[in-house]
Amino acid sequence: MKTNFFIVGGQRCGTTWLFNSLDQCPSIDLLKPICPETKYFLNNKVSYDEYFSLFGAYRAEIFGEKATTYIESKDVALKIKSMLPSAKIIICLRNPVQRALSNYFFSYNYGVETRTLEQVFLEDAPIPEYDVDKFSTNPFDYLQRGLYSQYLPNYLDVFPRDQVMMTFMENFTEDLDEFYRITDWLGASIPRVKNTSAINKAKRVSKVSDDVINTLQNYYLADTQKLIDVYNLSPPYANP
Image (tube, rainbow, N blue to C red):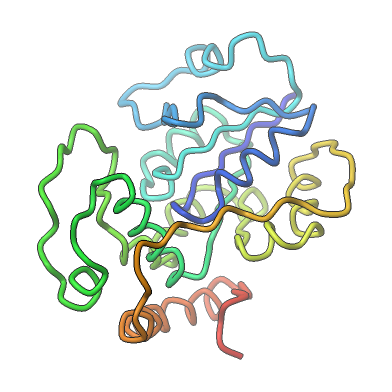
């Protein structure tokens, strides 16, 4: 019996690193291309046969898909549950301050964002005009996507807790034990190695001011505490 899993997000939380690392497992087949992501479950209608036809002639024991916009949609979770009730869900989290900055620089480097950091995070300047048909979600929602506790119920309310793994980018990209915890949870066979390559850091076009950092840190304090109190998580970036 095959295993299905989904890396549902969040954005800029190491999901591509995890996808590429899991792609080295001979027992795992991942839905490609990764860029652009297939995002099959954003379709209004989905079917088992159509979905697995996207994998082509793959014959692995474990099938996986990555789509970072999935975390924002309970409707997607319900579609996955309806088609694949035993699916495993991986939710990647990251220091929300660094996630927001990475998201900003990603948009800036691709020419979508034209505002400065200060205009975005301190002045709340209006977003630039953009072609909504080119995006499956708002490319400027930098702050909201770091409020992780608001997205976790989309999947925890639909899937049993033992089918959902929440992991932090700071852990699985730097600690092999955490990466192997993920592969073991999926039932994947992969040779143990001594180290992994460092994750690519987002390119920055300017120095981030203390005002921006402090504003972001304060913005996420309550949500980070909720991850600890409500979801019993241990964010590596949380204040001791």
